[in-house]
Image (tube, rainbow, N blue to C red):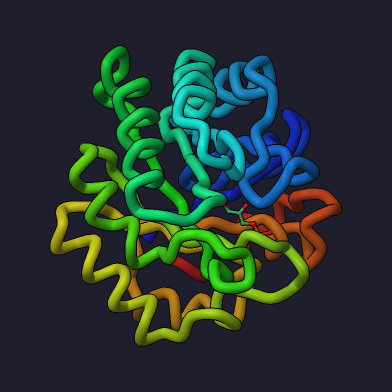
Length: 229
Ligand SMILES: O=C[C@H](O)COP(=O)(O)O
């Protein structure tokens, strides 16, 4: 299980360098808020051999806009391009997933496309995580992800239990996909996450000391890495 840490700036990225994957985002623009291309480019430089991920936003149903954002993130140097689906409907999700996957893979077949749905989809009226896996596989994207959409302190485990998260992970594996799980995860959740066994877990608040609006702390990234090894 790899640890993805989400810094919001170049300075925070320096504190995240012991993580497996450095995930560039702009938390002030939402759960999967997109940062600027020049920030992605700069973080890619300091990340060395570490893969860099970039969130491209909590997207409404605009396949062209999402595709161009995904293409921009890939060009700026992201190895993982993370796309949130903040709307409902399988057909509409298929359009966006196909568009972003084509946009990235035509020029960068080696890059990973990550499609995220939200654990709290019921309160937001958005697509269920379980509905996205087959669409992600059909489109040729790489990972199906769950995050929380509203960052109000409620965590992934407030909306989905260990059994349903294991089912999601196994469903993805059967389809040839990898799984990423995130959503206000805490150090206390790591044992359950090891049992669920997704390929990636994503954190920010946990390595900021509990409040994701503050700063990533290098010692907490190191602590998380030690607990996962
Ligand atoms: O991709 C992961 C997210 O940045 C998780 O952020 P969070 O741990 O603050 O919910």
